[in-house]
Amino acid sequence: MGNNIIDIIEGKLCCGCGVCINTCPTAALKYSKDREYFLIPEIDLKKCILCGKCRTVCPSLVNKLNSPQKVFAAVNCNKEVLVNSSSGGIFYSIASLILDRDGVVYGTEMTSDFQVQCARIDNIKDLPRLQKSKYVQSFMGATYESISKDLRAGKSVLFSGTPCQVSAVKNYVGPLDQRKLLTVDVVCHGVPSQDLFDDYIGYLGKKIGKVKAFQFRAKKNASNNMNWFFSFQTIRMKKNSIRNWTEDSYNYNYMMGNVYRESCYSCQYARQERASDITLCDFWHWDASLKEQFDKNDSVSGILINTEKGDMFMEMIKKNLKMANSHFNDVAAHNSCLVEPCKRPQVRDHILKLWIDRGYEAIDNEFVNQNKLEIFKGIIRRHIPSWIYMFLAKVKGKIL
Image (tube, rainbow, N blue to C red):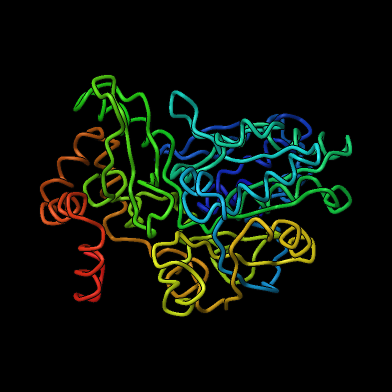
């Protein structure tokens, strides 16, 4: 093992966070991509002075984890916020508090050309940019230095991202600068590459018309009962088309864990202990334990409070939420990545090789040929009233 991170890269343990690139004092590291087009650091060994600083910030090597102190289920009381949130709208309330205190918020946005990246906002009008899930690896760029600069200027900072990104941010800024830093992680299954998503969007454009809007986890209304939709709009459409994940090759392969970066399948952050102050996730099947506390169609979030700082902030926003005490096992029962990493599917290498060798159309054609029944069920689900669907699902004992 050398005094740089080359063994992490070659061992496929790199999570693509880029914190080492931001830390290197000689600019010996730069963003690059591996053979499957996932982000990795590229090392210029002529510039590397073997100082080892990259190893001191790498979240694959250095982390500090905390066990959850409290567990809640919650829904934002504001219906408009709920419609524009993937789940219960908790992130919006946390971010609003920081912004109201003249702080700044860092989170993931999808740009108008569908690039997924970490963005900085200091105005609540920009908060919708950071709402909603994005199932693509977020590009961190020079976010670390920007966060550090804001903290040194005395600003309160909220960073929201995947657990490995949270750990990378905390490693970069160090313990002294973390007093005004609040971190929120989302329970992450794994990340596909930006290149794969780019080709998917391009393929959609050829198939149905140029895509001008795309949204993961779209809701039909505030009380969406945790149903999983995505939506898109092309230049030929007057309004968004809402579909189910089982109808679409990209969303299906994401949900099945077929297209994640290699390190996701051995993620050390997929566990009960967390790197952040607050962990947010969907609370699937909350009605099994909290039937009396929420309305039957509520889109409920699970919240893990991991530090005293997280608890303090939760106390300050709870007036905006409908909340109930819960238990880790109830939240984790249908959030497997709070217990262990996603299993590596046997088809994973085949699907990515198919894309690399023959383009995204080959992935889509194979998906359609192999999943006609799932596609049909997704279409049926979209066209029947939700109460009928939920009744049938309950009778059958599983989601169609």
